[in-house]
Image (tube, rainbow, N blue to C red; front, side, top):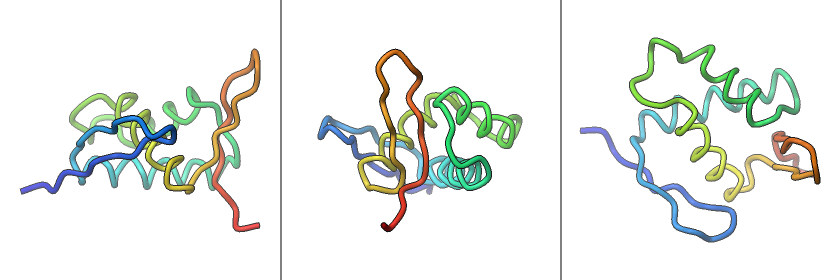
Length: 96
């Protein structure tokens, strides 16, 4: 039976329970995309993940990317920069 993961939210709001298998698939693809491109908008990140998981993933890829992104942001794995009037930019956190 698939273990479920409760996601965290960077603002302390309630997360969701999602399939552990789906969480890990999306997480891996998000990290690989950010390692390759450095920084992406949320739309670009969703497209990159979808390009790798399309046809191999049962469910909404954009929905899962949204929740995994929030969880990774809350855990300090990624940084999301919100700029006024511009798309949010997402990158991997560094240990500076």
